[in-house]
Length: 137
Image (tube, rainbow, N blue to C red):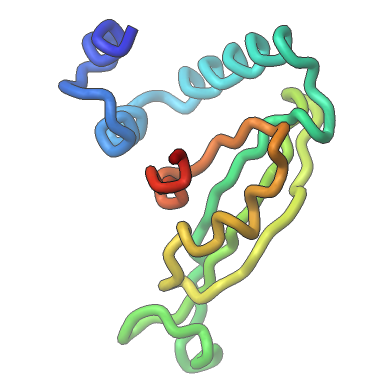
């Protein structure tokens, strides 16, 4: 399966960085269709509820004016904050933000993992910045 997937999307090996680079070139509609099909497959095995839902973990940087927000340290010439969001995805018509944290924009995503991932029964889909192989052991 891994070899076939690599050939299909045009990568040499199955690692999160090469998959991430390749999927950034793909149409959002294609990625949404893949995601919806995966949700349906998992939903058939385990009906979705608030405890067995998909949890989407993502962060986004919000730039701020350095003169107005000097406390939001980011870079030498920029200020900013980062919103780390846990979105509960029940189905295509039912999603809601379940939890979030706000940090300085320079904060690494991995540092917020434990604050956002807290349900053993849920299936988590995380941005690669949150991924840590040590957590899988």
